[in-house]
Image 1 (spheres, rainbow, N blue to C red):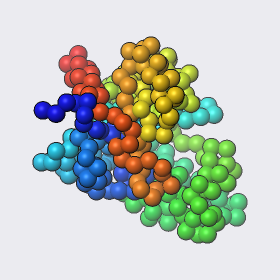
Image 2: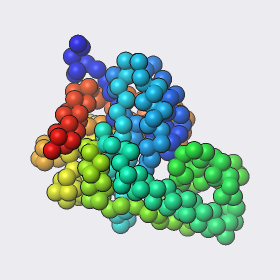
Image 3: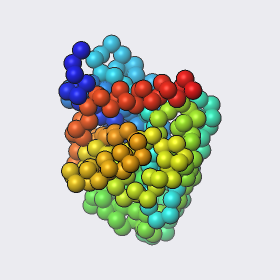
Image 4: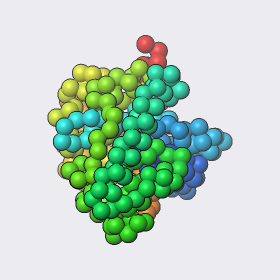
Length: 281
């Protein structure tokens, strides 16, 4: 078997089940063309793409890791918690995802009303059409704004209207980070703090809540940032994971490609061992 340190993986990628550009099966195909040994599908607050992704990866050399990225509620910023190898069919876990989905629907409707009042009318029906089977998110609202000619770029939608401090921004149902960690653990998964550079103040309390990993090798981070985060991981005995946060080649002007986070298969082995320990306990 090849040295695990020589095999590239990506532990953070999104499909059309949330706000990614590629359908789950297409994302699997693309991961194979990129030469990856493993891929974690981590859609935002959704696991609806996992069955298709797992089916597409079957009988290929690619290992598909079931995952999710949960959005958390904190003042003035955003915290996201990744979960790996969780039992996504767990009834309690599924019930919480329904709350997330319903919260997204209500939020999008309220945003549409605010945008109309601000002189940038779009329809909720069009936002739903753009989202398709995916969980509705702000990128779908932004796309509707772009189509209607109210903005020139997707980024402008967030800067002008629907960013956290924008006039059309609406909060929605979210868990606090500690509860997100607990939910993933309850479903037998391994919780990891995503893109943590701006939220290091949450690391210690989340470790106390059961956090097991830190996304050190995030594709958009420079070497100095990765070194600083690696120190945090060592301090608390966390698995140093990583990924590209891939949404697509065109989606949202994303600047990284799948597999560009310099993460090796050895990290997959660490995560799997931890997941097996959790399930055995």
